[in-house]
Image (cartoon, rainbow, N blue to C red; front, side, top):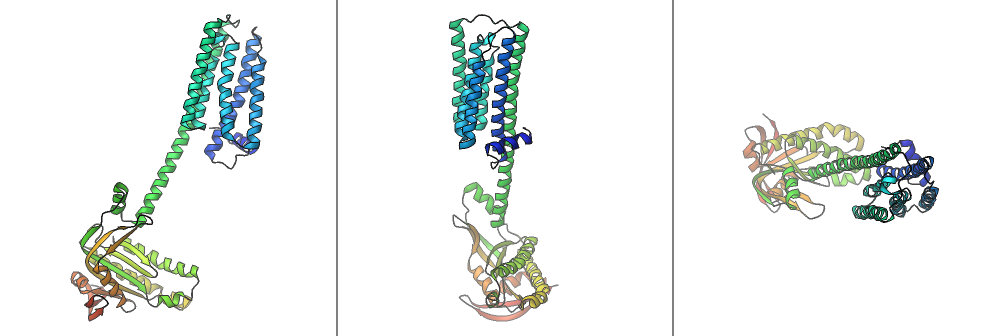
Length: 413
């Protein structure tokens, strides 16, 4: 709204260039209005003097001296609130005095109307409570002007009617123009603030969706909590890198995080491609699930397809990683299908998680797997045996679970 050069000049001189663009705009506008009022009051008095009226120079001088002292104090103390309140009082007082000294509402061409800029400006530069008090102060100024004129019965002004009309028009036009630009600036700032709030809201939603499934995030926002849900059939997959704990001790922290991030980002893309849900990572272990939170008839097959792609990705990187680090990042993958319970735990740093024996068995599938193989349970095999080539391994003991029949998935048919 204001020229950039003017904002730069005022902000540098008064030392508020470090503030936000909106605050710089507000303060520059306040200072500009002070200069405009000083010049207009002088012009107003001069015009009355040229047409035979008294030259009330002291009103302009008083406003100029008081405003200058206030500006100097503001420059050295940077107390904008005190500066603002003092200037608001002057903005109400000066038009009132000018109207009284020039013959009242008619004789002074309704100059007291300009005092309405005080509550308008306060709405932009201060809190609503302060603006409301300023508005009542303006109403009091109108009352004082009316009471004074009623009892003093001032003599008619010597100004020609055409000049009176011109001053009336100017006072209305000036007040309306400043009021308009104040409101325009306010609306622009509000629109900018709303856009910023919307952008931050979308960013928060995006971050929430990175943490929680869409349905769960919506429930959390609506209710403030998430009800745990049981899924009769879900598929859980675990992956990890063979011998990673010993290898990790040979890397710097930065290299370690960089490599884990490299693989897990690729896994994220594959999991997302098949509509699966990433649950969490623990060290070099990656966990995801299918069939939740939205049930799907294809989730078991999709999980195996995702596992094949993850294995293929790791195999493609094997030689390059072996040459660079002396470690091949060989992967093991375990999958099991069964019932789980899913929900959100915690009140801070919340996390979407799943529980149940299915999770434990899937973890045992991964732990019982050989490098670069996909180990599935009998329950998972029953869903995919007609679509994938599987190799029966036999019955193996799984800790805390007992013996489980296991199969390796070699590929699709």
